[in-house]
Image (tube, rainbow, N blue to C red; front, side, top):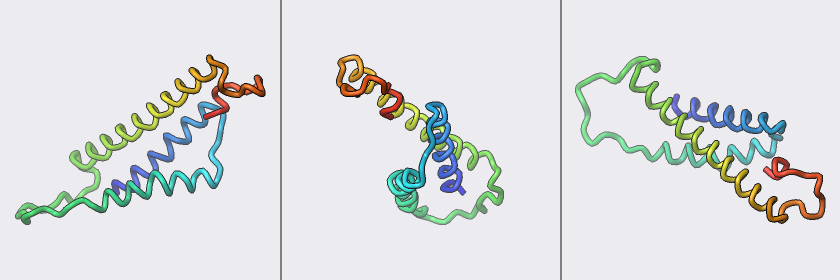
Length: 116
């Protein structure tokens, strides 16, 4: 459940960021997101260790319980913050290069948003 929620949230934040730039992802770009962003997420989630000792208490039977929802929402917020901050850092660095005349020196018609 958590993996599927994070998968859809990563795709959602990526598409929203690109739509804000009037861009769209192509099929190879979705493949890159799957390979380099979601595959490591799946691998690291699989390294979760089992508890050292079994508990007598039954696990939560509903996926819509507070502990699970808080965990998923927290992971989504962390993921969205990382994506947005990386986009802002890239935009800031490209702005610095544009100010110094290093980006798109041959063709002045392109802006820093086209280099994202």
